Image (tube, rainbow, N blue to C red):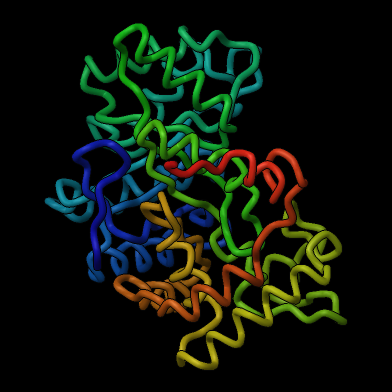
Length: 339
């Protein structure tokens, strides 16, 4: 397993991160334990969860697993998140000091740890002043409850505002950003990736396989059925069948299949390897239902695609850009060379 520094910090994390959103929902306790064991055995040290994943059950499962494996905690980087509602009262949601204080303490209890290595703000909150939650994070770091903090699902201007405000006050600044990013969703390259690079935030992409689309298991002419996320709910979220079943999607999938055939890899492994080596990416988050799926993903732990394969995938998945300021016209105006 390769290791990388997370953003502008000295924190070393594995090239792949184990996502645990399935724990307690699609993966029961026993299956979750098997995945955690397999990940650590393969050299993985980076585990991501959130308080809202199965309403706290994911964190509880990780805490139970840690309790049964003395000494393992010290090897790991545990990341969790707070922001969304865990209770129905008006102050049970958002990035207020009140809610984050409750959320952080509850996560510490469920995980059975004294310190969370990476505490992430799960989404922007338009109602809470930036200074309020930045001061809370800084206090939590001083109290030893948090080692580092990151952002999740923030846009370019939002992460810029957060970092600049933290620097102005001398408070703890974020080291990471967790965005949606994959071969079918590259729009963060318009501005977010550049903003993250400017401020030293390592990218931890979620949905690296686009909800299963990049595995090649779906058909252009047949609505998914059976034991898969779209089989159980074809209209599921951003990966819904009708939303994704487009010419652009099938062009990308054809390129992924071509690279897979030429390299002897699965389509999922190709998609993960491409993403793991994108500029600014530290560790894609694996979201597996089963240990078998996880083992297939872990084959990418130290795998790199060759240049020709990367060029083919880049070209097939290149997002459509408006002419200005992102497309050719804007790019030409921004270019400058020495006289």
